[in-house]
Amino acid sequence: MDRLWAPWRIGYVLGEKSTECIFCSKPAAGDDEGELILNRGPLSYVLMNAYPYNNGHLLVAPYEHIADISGLSEEQLADMVRLAKAWVEVLRRAMHPDGFNVGFNIGRVAGAGIEEHVHLHIVPRWNGDTNFMPVLADTRVVPQSLRECYEVLRNELAKSG
Image 1 (cartoon, rainbow, N blue to C red):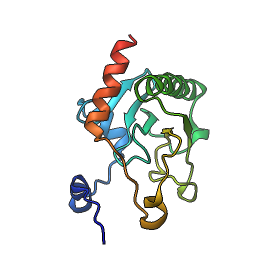
Image 2 (tube, helix red, strand yellow; image 1 turned 30 degrees about the vertical axis):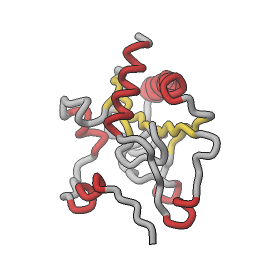
Image 3 (tube, rainbow, N blue to C red; image 1 turned 45 degrees about the vertical axis):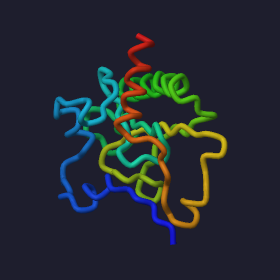
Image 4 (cartoon, one colour; image 1 turned 90 degrees about the vertical axis):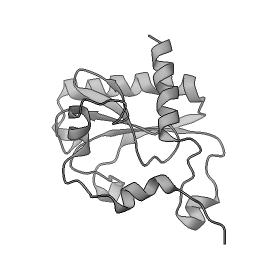
C-alpha cells in the first residue's frame, strides 16, 4: 500500500475547533499574511482556501456576516464580483490555468462547507488536473504549499499595481 503524507493536516485534525465564523474572525485579526488574506476591498476581501480543491483556490467573502447571497446588498455583490474578476486575472498571469470554476455553494447539499457566511469560490483548473486520487482514495493532491502559493500571488498582485 502506498502512503500519501500530509503532516500539515494534523493541526486541523487534532486542533480545537472554533465556533466563531472564520470569515468574520480572519479579517478582524489584523494579520493578513497569517490569515492568508490576499486583498481587501471596501465591502469584501479575498483569501486563500486553507483546504483547497486545487492549487490557488481562492475565496471572496463580504466583511458582514451574511448567510445567503439573497442577503447581500447590490454594492456588496458588486464588490465581490469586482474582486473575483481581478483575481481571475492575477491567477491567470501567475499560474497559467486553462480555465476556472467560479461560483457560490449555497447550502450543505450544494457543497458549502461553511453555510453561515456566504462566500464565492475561484478555483483554477488545468487540463489533466484530475487524477485517480479523488476517485479511488477520496484525496486531493495539491502540488504547492499554501504559503508558497500565497507569496506567488502576492508578488503577482504587487507587479500589477
